[in-house]
Amino acid sequence: MTARALTGRTALVTGGVSGIGLATARALAAAGADLAIVDLDPERLAATAERLSADLGILVAGAACDVADPEACARAYEQLAARLGPPTVLVNCAGINAQEVKPLHEQPFEHFERMLAIHVHGSARMAALCLPAMRAQGMGRIVNIASIMGLQALPGRAGYTTAKHAIVGLTRALALENARFGVTVNAIAPGYVLTPVLEERIRRGILDYERFAERTPVGRWGKPEEIARVIAFLCEPASAFVTGAVWTVDGGWTIRGDPGDDLGPRREGEGGPNE
Image (cartoon, rainbow, N blue to C red; front, side, top):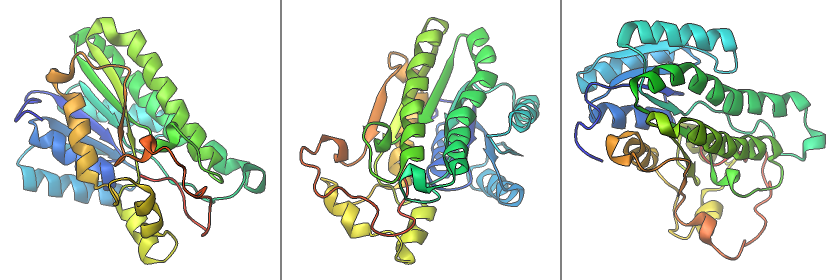
């Protein structure tokens, strides 16, 4: 990651108040970008924007938005672009974890639909809002958050797995459509990451840290900051020849030849690995 490589750029991060989104916001700001963050909770959003601005000494604008709501997305984009200028960097971190870890036919179908609405429709919608200005300026960076579950599958997680596979397809399609306009589109596929949501599930005994650490070749979970540093590189000018790629940042999870046990749901609430 090059120091101050994003000076003069505006970066928009969805899901920017915690976990990978917050770590990414910090990394992009450290690279010199002005920062726009979107999240669902207005109070947490305002507090996060104020804290980042004070910590980093930069301009931070926030807009509360459910990325599954088309009108809310349009309002948020217009509000942030009016304040900071159109973003030339977009990182789609907004997401939710599996509400239930059960076979598809045993869950309310609304859970499946909500998963796609946030992860897939939300990412596509924010990209569609940002792309016209990026193409006009001849420079843009879009990074979508996929998952190891966008490359593999685990039982009981049909909605999450479908959404993350779709994000990989979306990334590749947008990369092809926009490459000649100086806009790159890539995806990150994190493994199991110690986000606040998953740390809380570990504390409550819902999620077994050791079980998944043992399956990961490096023997531990990732940290949000480790994912954010890779995302930040893909947002820099130096990454201009990288597009349509899916970068696994998973401690070796996806290269392991033997599957171990099937890691099917043993405890209620074992959802996706990185929300």
